[in-house]
Image (cartoon, rainbow over the protein chains, first blue to last red):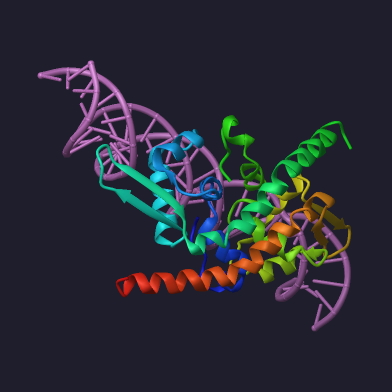
Length: 119
Length: 119
DNA sequence: ATTGGCAGTAACGTTTATGTAACTAAAAGC
DNA sequence: GCTTTTAGTTACATAAACGTTACTGCCAAT
């Protein structure tokens, strides 16, 4: 998410978008709702994200303190990610998004169809 | 918002992000919570958005049916934007974001300070 | 005749975000 | 000794998103 200039940062929505904006972050966070998940599993559950991007996004989320990275010193390595206390506070937003998601998609799809039909 | 590939689109969160993702859309929608607002006023209320981007984003929101554009044929022209019925359904998400926004920003700021202090 | 306000548009440039492909280490299993 | 597995990294490239500046048409007021 591109940085905002100082002024806009009085808006609370701006703040959230700074932390969970971007294409993949809400999706990743959504996968962590039910507890820790390891890197490889995330990659499988979100097939269209490249490993590089996944790594990057996880790193950012970790730096912002939204998730915690547990690295077990095993061979082959095992790394798990889970929501931190701060990260848990995003759950209501994610829930609201999830609830609305499919409904809205249908509504908009239908709306667009009606526009094409011409009103 | 960059397009998602077909596969990920089973995720409801992806859907919302397709429509209200992006740097400015949630902010614009947030400004329309209390009824129609004209273009110039939006530009003033969101000073860091350029008029071009504002225009673009509004157009996208309109195409997706989230907002309605009322153009009054006056001189000088007057154009107002307001949430459509579909757009209204996003309100819970925006509310959740707003509620969380400042809280989370403080928490994260504090967290980062503590990291710098070294744990 | 000039200025100002409104809601844009056009041309152009920059910055982020995202993607691909190839590569790494180290132990365990065959 | 070769392959597999995991969680990455590196180098490189593209695509979206965002931004700046300058410009438009029209009427009303100065």
